Length: 240
Image 1 (cartoon, one colour):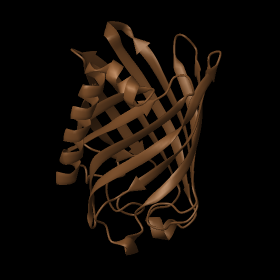
Image 2 (cartoon, rainbow, N blue to C red):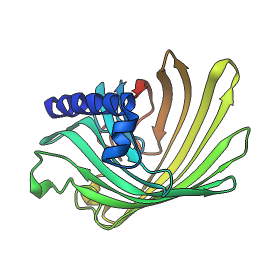
Image 3 (tube, rainbow, N blue to C red):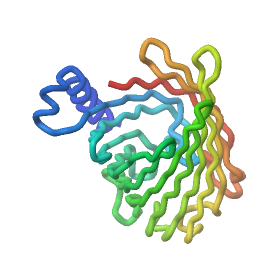
């Protein structure tokens, strides 16, 4: 957790500095910088808790270039794994749009500092996504592929769909459904599984509040030791 807090301190100072001095940022490097920080009651990744169903802090720094569509970023969160208490994701890619259709191609490297190399926690994924703006709602679909998934569980594919709908009183309804295929289920610790979520979002005084219901089709403890059951997650986020 100490490494996460140190990273967030740097991220917030860097993001605030970039936001307050856009001209200076443009001189040093074309594009725009932003930062974000989140307090959440649970870190849920593809339906499974990564923080042992406990609160944690998260945050990141992003750079994007509007003319080329290129982007880079780093994001961190506390986790509760054997021999690992933090996760850092390094990502980058290119995005664009054609009419109302948006697209995104990129890659993500998931790093768990301090973990034993024999646990093989670190892995990377290639990502592809497309979205459409229906005016009354937004929807997207994404596909993630890893040649050697978490815990050295070999090939994996994750297919997901997302939708968001604005509601009265400045609320936003969001929904998500995904399916995770894993080549070596024994190494990962579960069978292939589906996950889904339904959430409500609200922004007040620059803070984004979200309450999300998460679940999977895995049964505890027969198909998943812990952290894959139904739960409500509340989070507060701030962007800079």
